[in-house]
Length: 135
Image: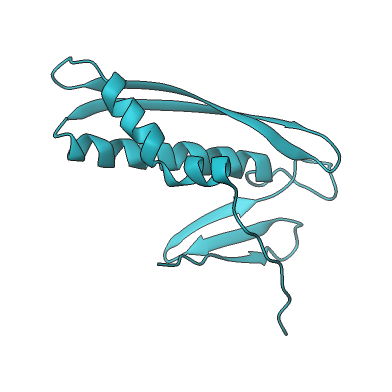
């Protein structure tokens, strides 16, 4: 299984637009930083969205596998940056989830922690290759 996204610069700006199928997102630097105009998410914000979004999706899959109906899902993700070059040193998720039957969600959240693809990828590491292609 593979997933590919494309990113191109947005003409007249220093931002990039990424897309997969009919979904798009704008990535930029904060205004005044390396030509950034603050038009979209920063790289750190995109990483946090990937972690949190994957956790939300995995929570739904886990709930379905446990035959649990959930009604409220709220996830806050904080990434801590540091070092030179700048890297993410830590990511913290704060999860609030409720079941429609009012039951406990601790088993559901634990199962989600075990199955969340992005979180598990970050914890285990991933091989990254950077190549070039002709225009």
